[in-house]
Every structure is written in structure tokens, then in C-alpha cells.
Length: 239
Image (tube, rainbow, N blue to C red; front, side, top):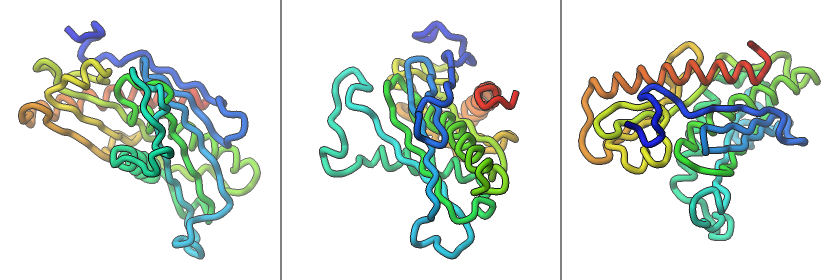
């Protein structure tokens, strides 16, 4: 029995609320159960210096956790003067995931910065951030396409992400903190809309996992990603 009493292939309640930021070109507040992440996409009519005159655009991401997003207060990274390795790893993952489904040439020389702020954390913050960021990015492209800054929405596909793991010997979908903190294996799957894989992060926490276990988790992730893509399309008014 999972601590949440969910079935092995059952996700937490997921919601995506768009238009949550008045000023950002795209925004989405995504909730995976008690994990809440605000994703905003800001469009800049320029690219990083190393991309100038390339004819291509760029999508990048930043990630952070608010001080009381967890049980006890965590100091702001800005106050410490540097980001943790975890923060840097997660924001690079978000950026890679979004660029995997973005046509950088079709963007022209503009940049989209996606900010992911964790308001409340209960496991799966990076997967929630990726899933919500896609919605915010789509909205931003949709808005600038209407102004003529881009000719059309420069996305080649969709992206959604979900965690899986092995908890008390069973493969389960969408781990909350109670499971994540005690899992024998912890994994994150980032999948494109056509079911192809963008990235897999899979780690044995207590003992090695089997090939069959990996395949089972991959099947669970594919099911979860399908559900998330449906919710993304609903939030964007595409379904």
C-alpha cells in the first residue's frame, strides 16, 4: 500500500492554471498534489552574445525553491551568493527538455527565459516544473506569433515529465515526498508528445534495480505522460 493509498499507476491530482502572471508572456501554475510550481515565460528581443548573427533563438530556464516551500525554512540562494549544484542541474534539465521540442531556427534571434519557482514541495518538483514550463512556453510563443515577432509557434512537439520509482519492492508512478525519501529506486522520465524519450534520470538508492524494473517504470511513465499531455492541451485550449 502506498502512503497516499494510490494505485501503483495512479498519479496525484494534477491541475494546470494558465494566465497566473499579469506581466509574463506565458504563465502556468501547476500542481502535482501538494507540489506547486509557478512557471513564467518571458520573451526577449535578443539572444545571448554567443548566438548573435546565428539566425537562431534560444530557450533557457531558471529554477528556485521559495524559503518555506518545505517543512522548515531554507535560506535564499541569493543570500548565500551562489546556487547549489542541485539547482543548477535542475534548471539545465528544464532548459534541455524545452529546447528538445523547440525549432530554434524558426524562432529567429529572440530568447525565452522560463522561470520556475517552487511555492510548495512534496516530491517531483522538477517534473512538475518541466510540465508546467511547456504550457508557459507555448503561451509565450502564441502571444508573440500574434504580434508578428515570430511567423508561427516554433514548437516541433510537446514535452511532459513524470517521476517513477521502486517503493517497498513495487514500481510506482509519480512519487510524493513520503515515497521519494524512502524509495529503493528513484527515476525521472521526460517524454516528447510522440512518446520518444528526451531524458531519463534513474538512480538506485539502496540496491541495484533490474532491467525489468526499468521497463516497468518506463511503461508507467508513458501512461503518466499521456495523462499530462491531455491536461496540457486542455489548459491551452487545444482539446
